[in-house]
Amino acid sequence: MDRIRIRGGNRLNGSIPISGAKNAALPLMIVSLLTPGALTLSNVPRLADVRLLQRILQNHGIDITVAGKRAGQTGMGDVMHLSAKDIADTTAPYELVSRMRASFWVLGPLLARCGEAKVSLPGGCAIGTRPVDMHLMAMERLGAQITIENGYVIATAKQGLKGAHIVFDKVSVGATHAALMAAVLAQGDTIIENAASEPEIGDVAECLVKMGAKIEGIHTSALRIRGVTSLSGAEHSVIPDRIETGTYAMCAGMTGGDVLLKDANANHLGAVIDVMQRAGVTVDIKNDGLRIYRNGAALEPVRVDTEPFPGFPTDCQAQLMAMMTMANGTSMIRETIFENRFMHVQELARLGSDIHLYGDTAEVRGVKKLTGAPVMATDLRASVSLVIAGLAAAGETMISRVYHLDRGFETLEDKLSACGADVARISG
Ligand code: EPZ
Image (cartoon, rainbow, N blue to C red; front, side, top):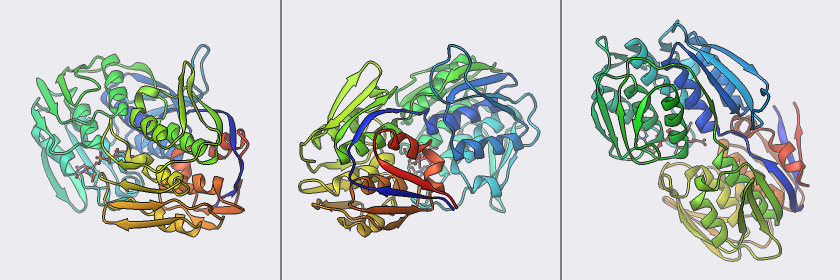
């Protein structure tokens, strides 16, 4: 199994291209189930999760080809052509769904297009229990009959889905995707209240509109959808990854130096930019991205709660904690979205950090020095927090189980090395 070796202490200077957003690319690929037409996605990040979802969708009969960029296309990712002319299989098996939770999201589109779906319950997850009750509630509101048998959700809507008024009692990205993808092909009008307004949902909604869907309230927490009988193919470019952007911003904040995050979209990062500035890191919004620098100024401690968008994202919590391990005082970081998203704390302790957990809150007492150590990646964002700490730790940090990193960070070691970090992948 590959490992990442970091020799800490180098400042970062240079430019890092931001890839397409994993959490937009995945639901956009799933959207292809809704049309017999061809969906072409560009700026698709080259990630293990994308490759896995490709396999899962191929299992449903989607024809997928991946090509390089076409003339005039911007972004640096792949161009992916998806064509679901016929759905060959409406079952998403446990072996595949258990490996990636987002694949559960095929439920809504399969029901909407085929009137039936059998999708494995996703099972446990390192960052919390992560139930799917809100997904199921939304499908039932849209008229589906749902039973759970042998670990599978069996959903049918033989007469088709019907528009409905769906009110979520908490904000869920996945349940909003599910409700939106199902409602676009339902008969009549649907209102989704307390919808998640993460930029990735807006990106999916904009792609659906290009395909002929009727959606109002995009980028807000109230979506109004007028169902249509069919959708056509479309071309769509995936938005830049705001979590990757926040991560590299924190790498630059942690090590000092001066980095341009190319193609980053500041509009998706308000809360992260605010926290970086409070921490003493300068963020300049440029035409071609975000410039992040901290030349000599001390890192200041911060108080942060994770929240749904536009609040500070849970997907940047571990990275912020890593940066705050060397702040000039005590930070308080509260995780309000997932109940078990502190797996990085024990690993960060191995590098010499001083973090105490009180329920959902981490008290991070800044230390003057971290020292390199062997550590283990536990989930995607936790593992990249170890990279951030390793970049500033004296000596060598060796991170094992880096397949977690490969799920969500494209060529991380190349991007950091190009800015002067001493980071290498050790194969085998
Ligand atoms: C999405 O997960 C993201 N995944 C996660 O990114 C992200 O951390 C999360 O949203 C929050 O922003 C993708 O986009 C592929 P939720 P999702 O439904 O949709 C509870 C990463 O590192 N809930 O918004 O699964 C749930 O347990 C990842 O890239 C229910 O109670 O998250 C959680 O406490 C990991 N019932 C809260 O809602 C439900 O039916 C928010 O979860 C659904 C969710």
